[in-house]
Image 1 (cartoon, helix red, strand yellow):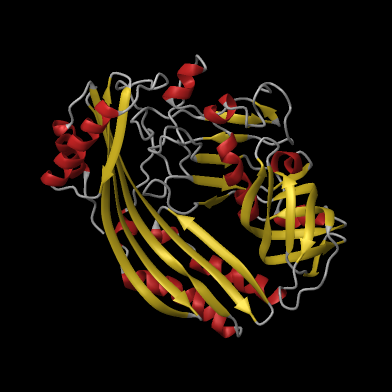
Image 2 (image 1 turned 90 degrees about the horizontal axis):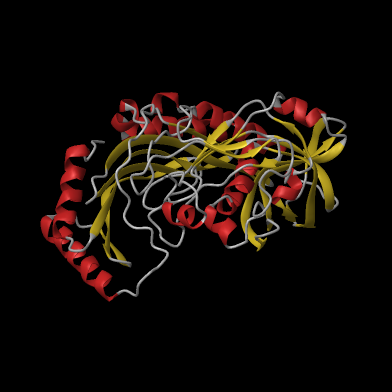
Length: 451
């Protein structure tokens, strides 16, 4: 998979800006070549490659601002979107909260997130990785469904005030749900380098756990001690990320609002660190501004959130370089790391006399944002823990609990961090988390299923 390349994306951005008429303009170019090999019933059924580019043009005329996007990167398409954005800006109402198109600022050096082996991976390479998972499942009389993917992504930001920022990256992923007649489980691995993508680990994790997940039993609902596997930890931290922004603090819907410097949750540290070489490093945000490392929670104490230019100006502080291209979601922490502890998964389990191990959650939705109460389901491997051992599979639960409240009962943190990336945001896979397994002293299950 070849890159569009910096020269081509610079041409696209410059051409759009050339046709923009206003006090200032910005062009964000998002390019992606995604390749996917899907399998179901332990057999490959689809291979596809998608190559696309989108251009987001923002034009400011005084305090009036408008944005439009297009997937046409030819001269006519770029001229059209720039002219229409310029015309709309003149018709838009004045926005007193608009901080302006930003000036250029120096960008720090980061480790490259681009790997040649991922860009060069073929359909046969992905099929071989899928075969590892399918063969392991078939050998045990199980069925596997999932995918192996390789993505080449490029982000470029330019504006009429001198900003130019460009970063390519690659991501490879193997993901599988493995099913038996009466139970299922899940495995996932993500790597920048396809050569490091461990399909064998996906197969071993999902198949081993699926064999143990057959014929689940009833287990009483209520508040139980739990071990959350990294997937489940990520599901909660991913939901929490929307509360960790300047806008959420400004609007009074963040549990951290008015509580900086206070203990707000359990004894763990959460940082947003775009420079983490084991994540997906990128030095700038979607406005081409330098992204800073931000300590959000330190040993349970609220320290800071992430800020775009607008929310930072209203709070009379400096932005942290976390702007998104979606103006309704002006900033997000996109490089979250839950700092590791010192316990193995087995040690986390051993610390529980009676409780539950959760592989992952599903369909997690807000109940009360300020109190971080969410509801959802367990999925793909839920087990009873008895006397420090995984005892037997249990039927899935519905849960309703506060994220920062349940994390306030933290009793142990795993020593191994798992890199997990959610699905596409803003036209590319922009966010990632590195998270451990955790032991919580209380997590509330409010209902049980029949499966």
